[in-house]
Image 1 (tube, rainbow, N blue to C red):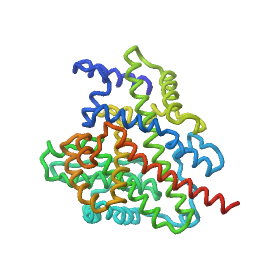
Image 2: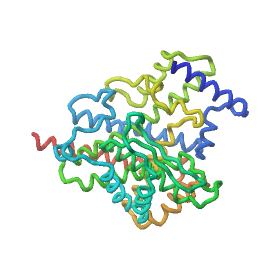
Image 3: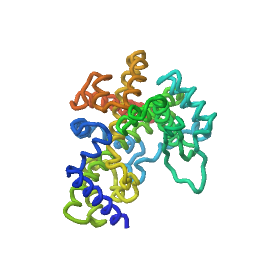
Length: 379
């Protein structure tokens, strides 16, 4: 059933491309995201060139648990330390953590979060009729953001809440701008959300008192890096191959499984025990009729957030002077223009992406150092 549906959607997209006079499958997505083909290709190329570093986000976790991670455990949280087992983080504890972490981003961010709570603009209750996941919308006529999510008492929900508040705060900065200056493409909107999530993890890590707690939060950083820099490229490559293959005829579920296996092996190598061959069937992002290639902008946003994290840690005053202007320009300028303007680097060259990847490698090295020190203690 899912194979038939994916064939129908792919056929619709290809027909749309042909009718528009441009049969190249990525062009429309690049226009939607206001990003150049060269920037996307350079990002993926840099990730592929440094794939041995990125795969350490898996191999180190395998080392920590004593065996190769199974595919179904790839995104599991770390085993909780005694202090974290006994501490349940409720919704308002998470809100407080996000406010504290957000002070690094902007002095006004905590007040915005308070406003979201006061106005009841966040729906996060658990309900048997609600699915997991989260999204935000900005109601332009009312000049109001809304967040819809399901909050569980765990770090993943807290991180997800930070992402959504980062998105909502970004849109809030542009609430008084006319529509043609406040349309934020996904390639840029993901920067604000992911940066807030990364700041939350850094905040929790820095206030951790035990090595076990630090291990838990560093594990989470490894998990998200795996997702953004390995799983996202797998999805991108699979979708690109899907649209190319569909031109030659319909694809069976077996064809789609084989294509997913090929993409999976390219990016994950043999670091994982098993392959998520049915990722194409259960990942809803492949079935969005209005947003093609709903994948690579996440990697773009994640790595750009790492670049901003570099500036924030090295020159915080510079960060606070340029970041608000960057957010405002996201509504009307392209990704390439914004990066060139505020980072003084071109995303069409490897320098920018490697600089961002350097920050990811720092986190990986921190996790490895913690593992080594704990191993020495046990010995």
